[in-house]
Length: 141
Image (cartoon, rainbow, N blue to C red; front, side, top):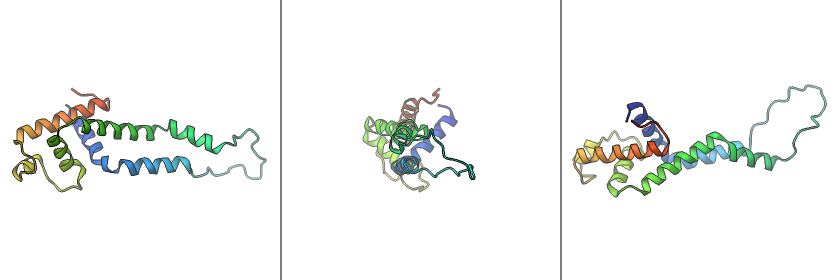
């Protein structure tokens, strides 16, 4: 896997614990948009304006690219975690989901946080990252 792809996938993994908050905030932004300033100073009313704010917001939420991307990434990570073993999940949690502790795979093995060799731990992590990159339709070489 190319380094740029690996870094992109790792960045997405680091944001995973915050995804529910991001999704909720984005939905709130779409449900309660800030009104556009009225440039029509002293003019009349718009006659052909839609008067269905609920319908407009439902269509906006269903079609919003950013919201769809957040949900897609969240589901892809969930699916990969569901199909991974306990050791792989532990590696991913320790490296990406916990606040930055500066731990590396070598540290996890030396401190017996994971019961495998360093080489096996790197293999498990790399397999997980490749599987996630494929689910996210990122270019994997």
